[in-house]
Length: 272
Ligand SMILES: C[S@@+](CC[C@H](N)C(=O)[O-])C[C@H]1O[C@@H](n2cnc3c(N)ncnc32)[C@H](O)[C@@H]1O
Image (cartoon, rainbow, N blue to C red; front, side, top):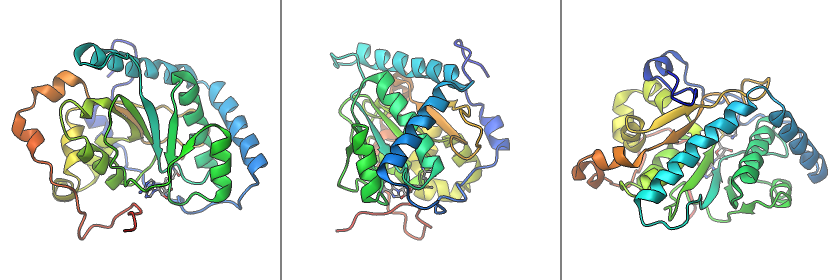
């Protein structure tokens, strides 16, 4: 289904036919590049994305986010009509992985277009990755937040191919009709997750993804590169404020912190 701007809104049925993609080679990397080599490759990747066929569509999709931000700011007490920042979890290793390099390139494009600060965290970062990302002006988080960032203003979460727990934790941390719409999530398609993970597991362990999926608008990212493992199965998820407020109070009151006992957890937890 196309929306009024000609952008592809994910149809739930269509998503059902798509196979849920769990990145098969997330742990397979090439040898680590030097800082300079990595910087050059990321800049080349950025150029490639900006001259790709799908780039105009991607930029148009950012207008969806702009409209959403405008809507939130108009209807709440936020004076500043802008995005507070970008938080990126789980980008992987830009110094070793082609996928992470292209995803970093897209993150830099987002940073440039939205003119906001970017915080990044992945527990696997090496000192080379940190130097590379800092060179691009990104702030490296030291603490493992397990995705439980409570937002204070509209925040873009760039979480390409992250484990379900990270999305679920983020939704839990902001489980409130005022705050959840302030989380714009670019990550694995929630409709794919809901279609492909058994209902009993979803309802028991990933209930925040399960509940959000039926409320949010999901815009599928089209591929910007020749490789099908870089931006596959990623969507922009936006939860309109009026939909959040249309839910009864009870819906928001059920917010026990997720534990994932007995689950095959896909994230690194913080050490106490
Ligand atoms: C499937 S990989 C995706 C990597 C890359 N984005 C890609 O598409 O290939 C999931 C990533 O999430 C990271 N991750 C695991 N626990 C995390 C946490 N608590 N916070 C942030 N990232 C985490 C992993 O280290 C890994 O790099």
